[in-house]
Image (cartoon, rainbow, N blue to C red):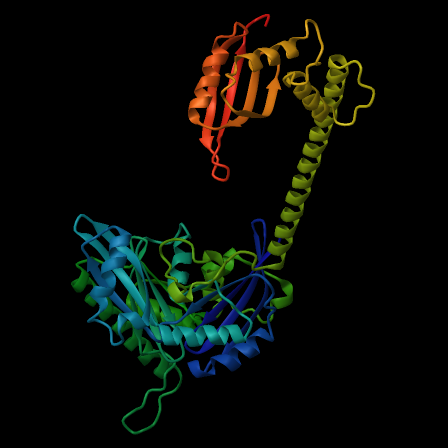
Length: 497
């Protein structure tokens, strides 16, 4: 599947965009453009002009910015754990920045660590400045997932080349200023912005202006002298013996081979343009050969190649500026998500369908088994609607007590029981029988009498009968309305009675 990345390089004097299409291991530049930037206040019109020349598309957007507005500090922290560093770093920066730490986005690189702690390269960008830049990007239809320092990304990309020495110097030359970055033991350790460029006009004593090679040579010597002073300052302040083996020259002026040779002579070390490394890693589509400028677009290519990976890149999109989500940012990703959702939906529906079919088959099989069992248990049944309900009803009928025994059966059993009860209740006792239930095992009798003592007399008289194994008073209570005593007796029949 083809993917697309748009890299936006916001320098001091230009804004450059490169669109790279990825297909497997192949990466090809399919669009590029560069627009002049006179000041940061002109970012909106510059971006509007830029997006008119390159397709924004639905791919990933990454952005690199210059040191304009960025504060840099080299600090030593007595901790190596990043969580502890994150906690104490704002306190360390509180008295070192012109703007309060709470009003800045802070990120850092660990340039060294040991038993005594960690050394850091800290970058701070004002939230107000970052917010304005992000608003300008959004108005142009761009939502980057990474905002980092352009020179750090270029150095990080250069480090992926195995031919690069462990110690080198990156010199980025702009129209109005330059920046230097020291790489020691393959780590970025020092970063500085220099307010000097080989292309600045130089005023002479007679108010004229030097032009041509004399001006360039003088400014180049001043720039290289400032670089050597920075190397000495870093060596003294950090105690690091930094001896770069090569200087990598970036920016549009690096396309001038005479300038690169002059820098090499002044610094007494090998000098190479950065585009010689970055261009070798990308294929350029034939349709953009005329607009493609390797020296000007080396930073943007490094953004595509590195993409913010690794520890040697800072990212200012954090905290309140963190992107809401990095998922489904492109058309192909959305199509892939829809395809996956459809496959999952089909799978779930198929599983539910198979499950329903299995349950239905089991239900029908159990229903057939219950009907068969009901016919075997009750062979006289002619109409079967719900075998379970009908079987429960038949079982209740079988288990129900035989309370409706025939009045004349066998030896007139019920009449004998009634005659025995009537004969054993004392004539002096007034009794009203409200209900009598006779089954195969017992007699239940409910009624009313005058006093509680009468209930006891009835119980005593019935206990003398040979028909009853036991006579128990289930309940006896006074009726509130009539004042008579309601009672219930249970008479247990003897076998054969």
